[in-house]
Image (tube, rainbow, N blue to C red):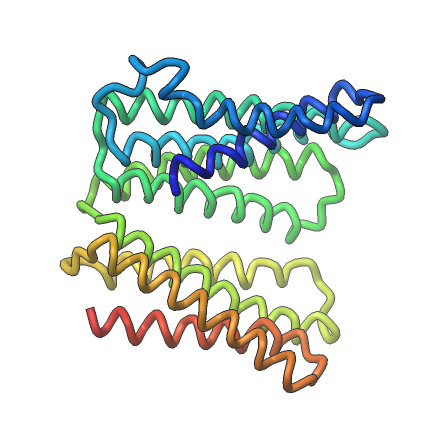
Length: 284
């Protein structure tokens, strides 16, 4: 799975190239397929680079690729702002950032061999930080694209630093962080349901701070809960995918009720996901 996902990253890089050069020929649509294939041919093209690696190296590389998309895009937004072709800058820099951070993650893990839990903490906080930065700018009512890009970039840097420090304080397993992330998403979903119900009454942009705070509280709650548990990869994966399944069922039930309530559409699947997460975590 971790290797196959590189097809999507490669295809994205190829699509970025298409958007930049804007070719007139329809045959150029094959470029994303070519780059997608090339990005999983690494062990064939450069076998020496891939000698003596394990799954954690690929996972670290993919974490870098994913976070690089966010960080590069944020940098491009901070630089380019708004304009007719300003969208090209975040698009191009997101690909450059993804490629660069992916390679950085690969080489770093190949040399240092951080634990899987450490890598997952980078991923978790690497997403949480930009989300908090974005929420802060939205709460302040900013309409400036430069400000949004800068706030996401600042949140990204803070997230990586905090995630690294948290991982140094306690030996989290990958399963532990999977559980933390599942709890965080479910808690954020419940708070979004509250926001959806209050938007008609209080359209203030500051309400975005409610789900942002829920994300932080869910993370803190999750980290405290897993102390001394040491969930296995299988257990963490089972919790995550089971919560996802419960959430999808909740979406289906909300559709059957036909209430038209955005709060129910978000809250029911989030509540079912949270309940499933708690039941399985207690079992483990």
